[in-house]
Length: 328
Image (cartoon, rainbow, N blue to C red; front, side):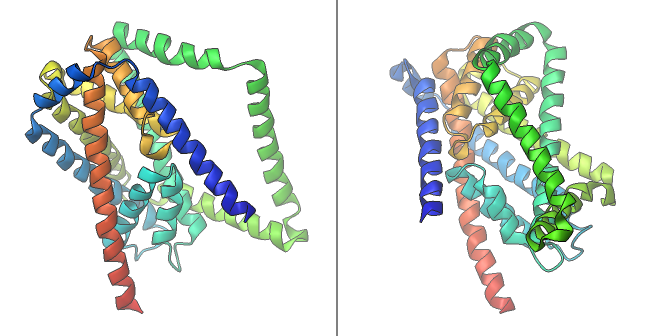
C-alpha cells in the first residue's frame, strides 16, 4: 500500500510540475495572436515533420539493435521496434518510466533485464554527447546570440537556484551512492541479497559496455547522427509551416532541437511545459520572434510527435500481444 501511495504521489508531483511549467509558458500570451498564427499554419509541413519523427524512431531502433546484438544475437527488429514504441508511449504519460517499460518489453533469456537496461543507458549517453556537440557547433556558428542565450537564460538562472546546501546535498548523495556500491561488492560473498545486487550491477555494466562489441561502430555513429538530423528535420518542417519562422535554416533547427531535448531532464510527463517554455524562450530570445510564435512552434512540434508516439505505442502493444500468443 505504501509503495502504491509513493508512486501515486510521484505521479501527482510530476503532473503538478508540468502544469506549473505550462502555466509559465502560457502566462501573458496573446491568444488572438496565437490563433492567428495557427490559422496561417501550413499543415502539409506539419505532416512532413511527423514523417521525420517516424524516421527518427526507425534509426533509434536500428541503433539500439546494434547494442543488443552482442548480448542477444536473436534480437529481432520487430521486437525491438515494439518495445521502443511502447516505452515511448508510456513516457508521454509518466516521466522516465518508459525506459523501464521498454526494458521489460524486450528482455529475453539472453538479454536479461539488467543487461538490456545497460544498453539503453548507453543510448542515453550517446544522446547527451550529441546534444553537447550540437550546442557547441551552434555556438561556434553563431557565437554571439546563442552564447548569450545559454549564459543569460540557462546557466545564470540555473546557477542562481544553486546554493551551498543544495551542492552539499548533491555531493553527499554521490558519496552515499559510491559507498553503497563499495559496500555491495565488498560484502557480496557474505550475503545472497548483496551478491544478487552486485550481479545486477554487473549485468548493467555488460549492457552499457556493449558498444565495444558492436561490429560496425561507424554505422552506430551514423545512426546516432541520423536520429538528431531527423529531429532537426522535424524542427525545420515546422519552421516552414509557420510564416514568421520560415526564414530559419537547418543549423537553427539543429540548435532548437538540442535545446528542446534539455526538457527531458525535467521529470514531467512527456516534457509538457518544460519543452514549450525552453523552446519558446530560445526562439523569442535568439531569433526575435514573438512569444506567441515560439509557443505555436513548440505546440505543433511537440504535440504532433506526442500523438505519433501514442499511436505507434498502441499499434506495437497489439503487435506484441499477437506475437506473444503465437509463441505460447
